[in-house]
Length: 211
Image (tube, rainbow, N blue to C red; front, side, top):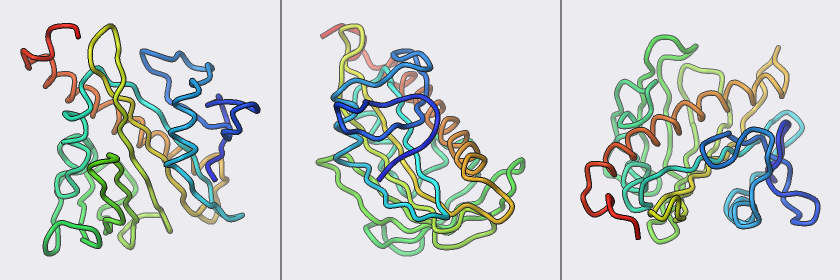
């Protein structure tokens, strides 16, 4: 089950675990997410962490329609489209559940390559799950889930993106340090995803008019 330190997502009555959450234009830092957001986490982001692992979930509201955002997220073969620390991605064989990709990491991070497997892809539910199976980094037994959910912001179609993960705590680090590092990477990725999605949405005449 997902659980971490910091601010809240849901509460005792909603039976949603406390989560660290990304502050954005919709929910300032320290606020709790709504019941619907909490239900998304409860239903789609279940991770079972052992004593030597940490797990968390990050929420991001994006002012772009869900079909546009999902079209970027679902591309297992093109993570570099919105992940700024990825310089290149090579997929081995076809693209589908079980596919493997080699991701090259830009300088500035304590890693050079990551080998990742596509565990789950559901376009109807807009759910993508990836597991890291090797590479030159310290993220051992790392697994993530990312989902996209339609919503409305200022009368226009928008998207709530939730990304959660579970990972081993490396020797010499605490759970808090490990989660802080991974959360920082995900924050950067989701901010980049938001910027790209909102640029594309702004260029779309159909999106320019309120619904």
